[in-house]
Image (tube, rainbow over all chains, first blue to last red; front, side):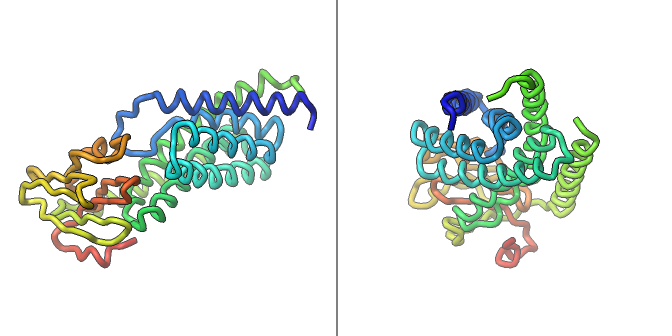
Amino acid sequence: MKTKKVAFLGLCITLAMILSFVESQIPVSVAIPGIKLGLPNLVMTFLLYKVGWKDTVIVSMIRIVLISMLFGNIQTLTFSVAGAIVSLLGMILLKKIDRFSCVAVSVTGGVLHNVGQIIAACLWTQTAQIAFYLPMLLFSGTVAGAVIGLLAGLMLKRFEKWKL
Amino acid sequence: MKKNDWILIAAILAVVLVAFLAVNFFKEDGAYVVVRVDGKEVAKYSLSENGEYPLNGGTNILRIQDGKAYLTSATCPDHLCVNQGKIDQSGETITCLPNRLTVTVYSAGTNDVELVG
């Protein structure tokens, strides 16, 4: 791996961690747990297009482990990993199909993140009734994913000529 | 954005709309709540009786007031379950992940054992 790439991916991990922290400081006044903007996904969507899926998965996993070590516990780690795996899988697949722009990729990521976390919550509590939150989360995931996807599109446009 | 993006977003929103309509269509006034810890039913309380009940050995406190159920305290730091507010319609659920605890509303006519899923 080129030195420039190592440094760049390191910066991306840092940026994603800062975005996680910023997001955790935004007070959520809604009654549904799990509704969030998904700011770190801005970095992941950008990386998916800029450096490919392998590095994106690595950056995402390192971010989750570090953030859980700093601010979370084994429970938050479990839920973050569950959401990230399902969402990254969907995003990578959708990008491979190559018929959508980064907005649809990001929307898929947002929605599947919520789906993954609901599945994790059902398994964690052994209670299927938690799926009650799903419709609200699908809606919020779509809106949040679209916002993040549009932002990622703007970033990709500005970094078009920039190469690693 | 491409045309396919709009189609995908519209498809997801259509699913959401159908899910919302279905939930509202089958929604009924609740009669009682079922408390589950680790998926096992541990308690059942009528919504028509006011009261305060410590759950799961006191990790969460459930209050039933004027036909609505809500959690008033929890041992976890984030208090997400307390913030979830009051519930009184069938299917509505309050979740406390750290204690693996849920409180779900059921209507009078339903047998909660059959409702799982």
